[in-house]
Image (tube, rainbow, N blue to C red; front, side):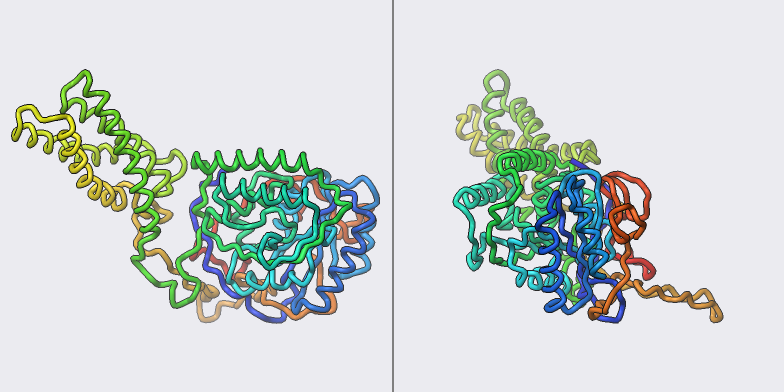
Length: 509
């Protein structure tokens, strides 16, 4: 599982502004492998639908996954015929690899994809991307399992789909209803931060992306869709299901071990401008209390078992100290990961040292209680000792939570200092000129967080290289790790860390 410990958060969502820029608002990617028969009718139907119904500029990108038939030639012909169509050629297979490559290179603020068979009714496309354009959501998915969806497919696929989603809910605590529907969209600023964390390059790419986004607190919008199964689908169900289960295990293990840093994907509190200056709002207090109580209850049981065990061969004070020491180390580790969401090994030793200080306070309370009990009774019953220790631990628990929250695991900003401001996102404007006569640099057409939304022009330039590579004048060949500018890098593109104030009027978010 890939890790990225870069600090930072995503800026607050905003409605994409309207304007006259020619940059497409929507880039719809169609990943294909040996689809020479279905590709042309699919693209023509999608292009006609967008021309008639979508109010902004758009682009359709055919991502060819190393096809061995005439699919590249068909894609090149469509790109030459239709100005809104372009194509990518990748030399390796993998739907996830194709989506990552094209989405990383695209300049459109809204990125989507759909399967070439167009099993999903295209009337759901505008409802899919509208919440992303408006700033309401970060990702959007089509759901075949929603109550209002209308689906036509065989019993075998229905059973597999529902079973798979039940596995996701039970193992990864996923709350979205349909992970595998080939009809999804994402905001480009989210994709830039999220894609470097997604490892899978095949069919599990969707699920991994959604699970990480949900765990990071991003908003996923679900759209009920009408869906008709394609009987000629080339998907190998058994192999895909096996690979997906391996992916579930890998992602679940990474999340449980804390090897993923999802803090860089968090949003500030409130997307309304009136909410962005709110200060001193406790972050996750209710969830932390619940987690702390659960961990505390289990730790208390663990402590009592240890105390009873140590009491067999030592005195009450020694048994109490040993049991409290062992349970305190386990309690600190569990609260660090489960209650306060601290992932990775950074600071673990310091946290344990601070936890031992808290342990010392608990030891003083419980030892003092035992001393008081022994002063009151020369030979107290074992059950009485346990009752006194439970009462003392309840008192120490409240103090332990306060110390954990305020001292051991406080909310920290990027510099490591405790932070009381949880949301502040003042839009940054162009930097002032150095002097009264300093010349103003010409404003780029695509400046600001996003290019203004544009009404659909007759034609728009493509951002991709149009070098003739024997597959048509508007087809670019790509291999895993190759970017649009021809440079080479890791197949999973790393993106610059995003912070609420980290904006530059001269480049997109």
